[in-house]
Length: 186
Image (cartoon, rainbow, N blue to C red):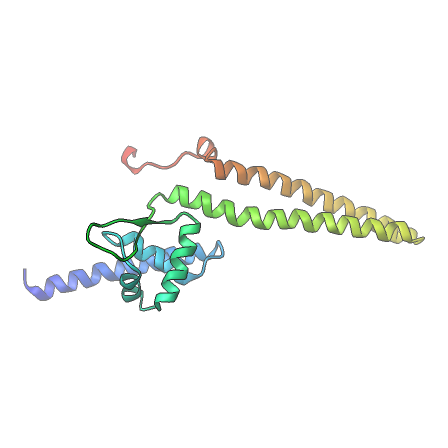
């Protein structure tokens, strides 16, 4: 095969993979992860072996500091892990290719934090409305406060349900209800 055909094929391959890495970055952005961190994960995922921060910097044309920050964020989400390669003294990292585990970790961490905050906010709002209710003689305001407290209690019930759902995701119980898809069994 002529060399230029081979180069064209490799270039086309790289273009397709790069396009999908952008899809990964866009998807992770839905969970509040910066697109650059998503691209970093994609680069690690599609790389055939572990990478150093220098390798990542060269692949993504970003600063070493950005790579370090991105790797740390991905490690906290358990999406990358340290790797070892004989003879290499620099820190190496590889992508955890279990997307189901990554999703449950990422989803759980992000949603738990926001849901707990929402529960606290609803409780504070109820408390503040009850204080106003105790101080007012306005019957219409009292009725409105009662209605709003009822709505806030409904919100609290929802957030409580959501916390149970998050727990089902985090513990992996979700896969009892929605099994992982195994392409080898199709």
